[in-house]
Every structure is written in C-alpha cells, then in structure tokens.
Length: 496
Image (cartoon, rainbow, N blue to C red):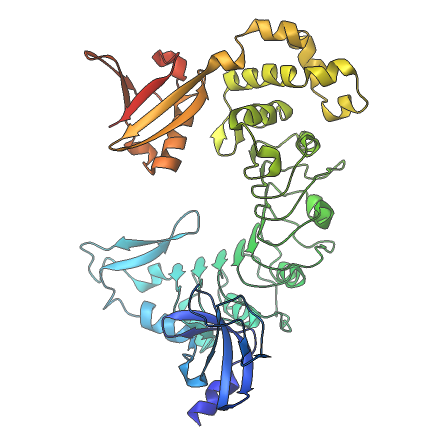
C-alpha cells in the first residue's frame, strides 16, 4: 500500500527529492524486461544520470545525456506540508538555536548568528515577518487555518528549492498572508495547471521570483491579475511562449527580469515596452540579434541589461540612444563587443550620451570627452563619404563636429587615445593582473576590476606604488583619476 501511495502522489513534470538530490519526473510506468513500476527522472545535478531516457533501445522519455535514471517509487521522499515545517521552525522560542536565516534588502538570504538572546529577546512572531523555508521538501499547504493564524504579519517568504508543483499551493499560501510583499519560488517546477480564482485580489504583494519555475507567460499574466500591485517579476529558464499583456495587467510593474528564456525577436516584447511604469528590464542570456525602438516605447526605462545576447550591429546601439531616461546599461558578451575592449566601451559611451554606468562601471566626465573624440575619429571616413543613412545611424555626429570641429582638428584638441593609455599591473602576493586604462580613469573603476578578477572586496583594497625605494605613493581617494597620482606611464601597483 505504501508502494502504491508513492505512485499515486507522483505526476509527470513534478520536482522530487531522492536522497540528497533533486530531479524532475519524466516517466511513470513499466520498463520492458524489468518487473514492477518505475519512475524515470532527469537529475538536476550533472553526472548523476546513466542515460538519456533510453533502456535497451527503447526511449521512455527524453532528457539531457547522462542525466536520466529509473528509480523505484519508494526512493522518492514524500513532500512535506508548509504548516508542518512552519510549526517545526517558527512556533516556539525554545530551540531557536544559534543561527537563523533572514532575507536581505536585495531579497537574498543570509545566515546570522544569534548571540546572547534569551526568550524575552526573541519572539517567533517577529521572526515570522521574514520566513526563510528553503530546501525543506515542501510540496503541500497543510493546515491553512494554522498558517493564517501564524503568518498574518509575514512580509517576506522564501520557498526556494522546494518541490511545490501546483501553482495553486502558492496562491493558497499567499491568500492567508495579507501583508506579504515578497515571495521567492526559485527552483520549484510549477505545472501550468488550472488556476483557481482567488476570492479577492492580494494588493500587498509587490515582488515575485520565479527562476527555473517553468511557468509560461500566460500563467505569469494570470498571476498579474491575482496580484494587481506587482512591481518586480523575475523569471528565467522558461519557454514563455507569446508575450502579450491584456489591458490593465501589470499597471504598476517597475522591474521585469527575463533571463535564459530563448527570446530571439525584439518584437516579442512589444507589449512589455509600453508599460509606462517600467524602469528596469533585464534581458540577459537570450538570443536577441537586433533592436528597434518605436516612439513611446520604454519611456521610463533607466536600467537595461542585454548581456550575453547576439547583438552584432552599431544600429542596435544607436536605437538605444532613443531612450532618454536610460542611465545604466550592460552589453557584455555580444558579438558587437568582440574586439578591443577599451575602444568598444568608448564607442558605446559616445552613442549614448545619457548613460552614466556601462557594464558595471561609472562613466566619468573625462571618459565621456575621450569617447566623443574617439567616436569622431573612428567614423570620420564614413562621415566624409556622405554615405546614405549615416545621419540616421549617427544622430550625434554633426553636433559633435560643431563642438569639437572636423575629426582631424578635433583630434588635435586633446592627446590621441593611444597616448592616453597606460598599462597598469596589480600585484597581490604571487598573483597579478594587467589592464590597459586611460590616464583619466577614476581609481574606483580600477578597484572594481580588481574586485572582479582578484576577488578582493573594495573595502579591503589598499593600493600603493613606489616612485623609488624611498618614496611610497598611496592611492587613497577612489574618486581621483590615475593621472592625479602621477600615473602617466606603465606602472606596477601593489595590493597591500
């Protein structure tokens, strides 16, 4: 009977826990030549599977090579209820332990140590404002009345990496948490099942995280109807299908994060572009090859990420120039950006006069001037040819000519870019990196590079160099340019 109950509770597409690992159910039934019932799964962890869903030449299901396995039903751990885990972790002050997880302001979770806290210092009611219930094998709701009594003041709920497969489980939980503002559902493979209409819309929920949930766009729109005050939606690793937005849905949306969703056409997103409140759009790790922005689209957008797409033409960058409110842009790992990194950065800056931060680094006033001059020189030949379409592709060019003069004369106003570049080597213990920078680069830009490549936090960086054996120069003001510290030629800096 126990054996049959496992089969009865398991459905195709369900995320399950087997031992210490997770998998998605791909097949339920018999295998030719083997006795009994089997469950075919695709493991989430690489290297655990033995095949691609094939046994003795018969294809029972499809999955990535070497990620498929067949397991007996009793190997699957039964999912737990939310109320069960809630009672276990958050009911009594006794047994609180030395550590707990809290949700940070960026909605990630952090383990903190509880030092010197007595029963009078900590109450579970206070902790329940930020419920972190990750990787608890939660699948079902449980006692909804108990949850309602316990979670009336919950603001943030993290259910990441559980085994919830029915979106209605999520909606039931949200319905009894009237003050909930943020819910994280990362890694729960949610089926596109029939949604049950809520009695009343939930007007407090602002942020929902759906990474690796598998929900189609149609269901995300339905969630938008249930939660009409959503401001942030984060999803990834899903085949969203057609992206349409009915009138009145997502009327308050400010941030939309759609990564790893195989978007290949800019036109798929036209309905998104006309959301008047949208300020942040993250489209990294898709397959977009070109952009075209029409009048009135993305009128409030200030942050845009297009990392890891297939953009290959300067015409796409020129289109971004139409976004007057755009201040922060990411364009890394596009075909367009293959080449000398410094030159390409300067060109993008020149195309986009309103951008203040590019690829994570602040654009200084001196760098922008350098970019404008370099841009004039770079496209000077096309300008003098008078080729058709030049003005459309380079709407700023004539204004820059008026400001700096013809390209040849403009170059004389400042040193050439080549003369302005220095090679900076940073040494930490036995490790070193070398980067080429303009002399007018702010020190803080170099510090960001050091943090990324040498894994040294900004607050722990102390940079020095030696003019000679007796003169040590400390670079202590990150807002100053390299030139301010006398770095006018190639130099080696020590990271102390």
